[in-house]
Length: 381
Image (cartoon, rainbow, N blue to C red; front, side):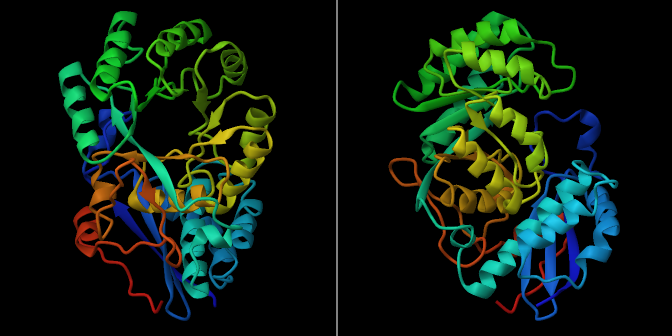
């Protein structure tokens, strides 16, 4: 079975707020792209890339000689070939983001053809359900309280609040936000805090992060995310050693090689690769296994799409060291793209599909709504 064609379905109009300059909110721009692979036998697979259609299209022009006609049943081998052949053409940047979407789609095809969930093809399932944490942007306290209450009503029992005014006004504001969140969800549920240190021109360094971590410990925060700029590995090593709460980061890194030093130096307690930018399922699974060898928890970064979430669910099923999955709420690129709404049990746990491939059906109306009328190609499996 060979790769015959690739289609790009750009997602427009509902990119989640947070971390984007207003210049990116123009309707003519898009920041996430679905990637569909079509085989010569009519089986199709769907992936997701954390970048614009224009950059994915440019990357496809680069990798086309190594992709079209390649086996559609060897995702890890095909993806590694693309990585190896692009050392001089966008390595680690938008080309790697594009390979992410390609890789996810190839695993989806492989699962459909073998009639197995991707997690089993990755080596086996450690779990049949996982705890999703509702991921929300920080806002003024009354609005954030309402959003947390709505997330609780949806069944979430773990919550991450991030970005917004945190670390951008004053210490009193930071603590007031965290206190309001803890008071809202109560003492028994997990609360995570994301400073958003990958924001443009992040102003804080190690001492701010250490002092803030001590404040967060007073509110039983499960982890402190992106407290420093994303390249400050020395700062993270010190912070992890001194912080009273676990430290997480690495969502902006791409390629497994970029994670080696972070893992070996013990820069984080929880490592957060994003399957739609790091190189796909093949790459992230290897990162997770290496992190596990160093007693580091993997928490997939999931601020992307329904396809990214579906891939994350298969990843955490196949990882012994992955007890959570990120779930943006609310998020049209998630809720509108799944054919059926995802539901949690009374303990806030989400079942991991054991159907072939990614394990989900997609909503044609939702895809059309967010792509300007495009539709997926019918698949023979």
